[in-house]
Amino acid sequence: MMDGCIDTHRLEQLRYIYSKTLLNDVVPFWMKFSIDRENGGYFHYLDRDGSLLCSDKAVWLQNRSLWFFSKLYNEIEKNDEWLAAAKNGYEFIKNHCIDSDGRMFFLVDKQGRKLRKRRYWFTETFGILGLSEYAKAANDREAYELALQTYRLIVHLYHHPEELPSKFYSENRNIQSLTATMLLMSTTQVIRAMDVDKSISSDFSQVIDTCIGDIQRYFFKPNERALLETVAQDGSVINTPDGRTINPGHSIETAWFLMQEGLYRGNRDTIALGLQILDASLERGWDETYGGLFSFVDLEGKPSEHVEWDMKYWWPHTESLYALLLAYVITKDDKYLASYDEVHAWTFSHFPDYEYGEWYGYLHRDGSIALPVKGSAWKGTLHLPRLLIQGIALIDDCINQ
Image (cartoon, rainbow, N blue to C red; front, side):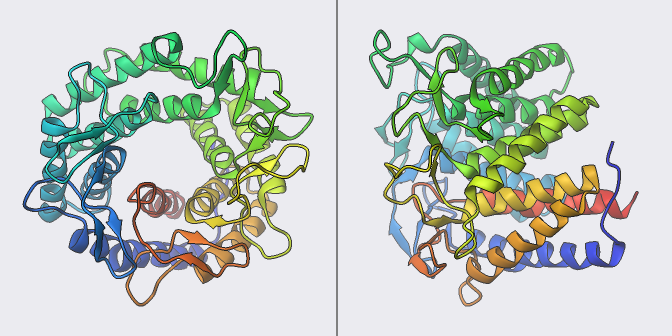
């Protein structure tokens, strides 16, 4: 169902940019500064030059770094240093980051002593990504079984949210979150690809069916051209700042999850839903004055409760680049290529740090640097590497068609 590609010369140029960014800027930075060779795991509170700002370790970023080094080994090159970096994280996560109930801690200290645990199960989803990818890289059945065990737990919690503390008093305001649905869908897609014996593929399909249905039934409002972050249990709009919030990055990320699932299944309706969401999210999220994507927008154009609403974060831009490239490859519609070019030009002229490597994560609305840090409790080794690794794979598929 991939109908067409950009001309080969252009693809090769883009592949060169992605590969150079990955191997010259991103990988060396994290290999040099993030690996804790004394305690295991990874540091991620890193300043512009890679110097350490804090030695605590957010577990969801431990999981993302495990995914990163394992994915490099699986997709880019069988480099033993990358596999060793992955093993360094796997042992730390396995031994220090999992609670007795199967949930994961949110924050540990550098030695792995527990500091904080959150009611959300989002850390666990990235644990599944990392464990699954590492299981493939190391041919480690134990890692796969741990991923599968954690996966079954989050599926159960998705269907039984009452077992976790609620954000609101549910008898007065019973809500549901897009984040849970999109993360479960993406996580299922990843672990499905690692299903070594194909024994539970039908279970994965059922979970993804549920996620697609929930996105379409509850969160996407085609008449308003918006994918909402939070809705009531029946899908109705909650007329509060929270309920009117649109996160363009999440929406665009969800769009390409759907497009990829449509390709996997050969289902044009799922692809069409992803394209609809992509179109709507770019319309609402793109800053026509300064360029770049807003972090949050309000459904009705009212002031956002997020004081950082007009900041330009790195990750919505990486998600947009992959989504637009995929959309063009699927549809051969020049509007997606034009949008890709616009987002690419803005992104690559504002986020890369050509002196110290890696990318800035947080810019003001006009594109000036708000924070020079390269790593934080939220910025690590997922969004930019995923764009580059998956982008290279998509380009290679096109070149080899």
